[in-house]
Length: 337
Image 1 (cartoon, rainbow, N blue to C red):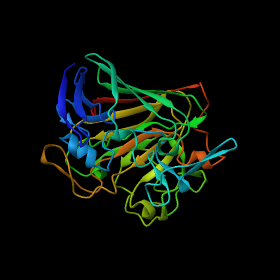
Image 2: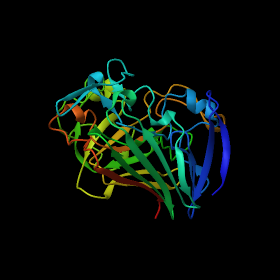
Image 3: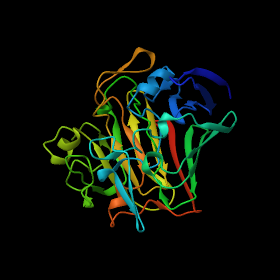
Image 4: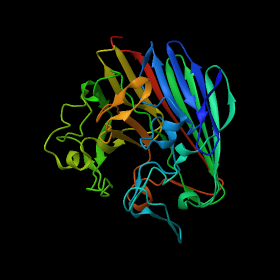
């Protein structure tokens, strides 16, 4: 693997890129944010991103970044663990999104090791960072096996805390077209509805008979403009799906007939956030490309959003000294196989 200078941040810190390779798969990663900068399958770049470190530092789209401590939204920027309550940084109105003002995407991570087909990053998130309790040591390993991109997360803390790590890659298997023209299936019978602030209401509702039903593959754009309250709240899909089954299993399939590419998503997590890039607004990206609304789709494997405040949602609490581990894989293949 080659380590390449990628640029400097405003504080003078250097950012480097690293490439890991498989059969027909080449993935470029940055130590800034432990970020996926590009995913090239058969020469097609399937991930949105920027060309410079300065753009990543200034950007607010979380392109390809590792998200933590807690991905997604926390209502009111508050959480309780046992008898202790904590006030978090509120960076989306009165709520906390993706870990607060400085999520894990805004730090240079330490590279522990790297080879031709894997790289390991780590960072220590100190006690009180963005309001979260405990010193938390976070590790992220990216690996390529054939045409599969894997992401392995590990975390341990010296106090009881909360952990919900994910990756925020925007995929576009069509490269330059709207994601509405790609096929998607999600193995989920239920989802968690949101309110007008995109916070889960606490309900778990069947997808059957709603635009949220992706159990049979359909164009992402098939129902996205329907007169539906949930879609109107998010201006598209920005919803948490309750995945079928347990353990490491296939949970979603994204396909492009135009470029003859299929991506299968596997994870051991209980949920997946489908986000269709509704807030992209003429964002200048790699290679002179401009990313418009719905130019990328995120499949964020995760715990339930706002689980810290909903008793009927599976807990994302991490006890002192316990080890959190999780694996997600994106497997690429030809669509006509």
